[in-house]
Image 1 (cartoon, rainbow, N blue to C red):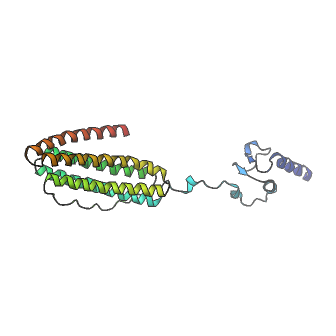
Image 2 (cartoon, rainbow, N blue to C red; image 1 turned 135 degrees about the horizontal axis):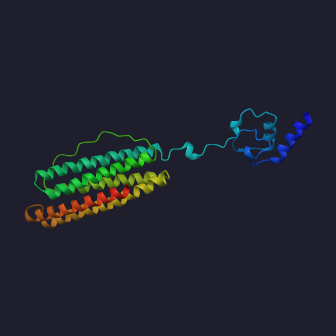
Image 3 (cartoon, one colour; image 1 turned 120 degrees about the vertical axis):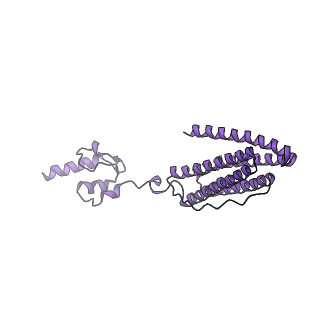
Length: 246
């Protein structure tokens, strides 16, 4: 009996050479634990003689995907801060829209309201990115928008200044993503980089027309009508983007 058992052990050792993967379904006895193991000849001998006290030491180490978050907590915190800025931007434009309403400038009010909706979309886009990355979200208090501004020209000058601040914040996010070699976040943020180029160009164009035709009388009325048409187009574009995203 002892000789036959030893022969069986020799058969298994010969069947499974060192540094080869083993699956129990293919073994002569099929009695070992059902998982892949990377073993040496000595390990096989210890398993056969029942001397392997800790089978877990044969398991493959956990992969990076199992142990590391998709983005760093620092990157997530910075995006959370940007969500706050985008929500503040929405608040900022809502205040300007209300001011334009009191001035009976319906087109200007509609344009600022469209901007409010855009900023809300930007905030939710970042929020969804953090959710998809299984990253923590920190929502903080939103500051109040500034007091009313004198004149339409000054309203758009403040708008341009605000958009430039947003652009700087987006660029800082991109720089940090690159420093962390966070390629996913870098690609995600490129949409906002392009968006900010368009935002600043649009406001610069409106300012140019206000300075050329004036922010009073017939010149202001003409620009107000133009802004109404632009606001309608912005709403249609936002609806198209929403339908594509769905």
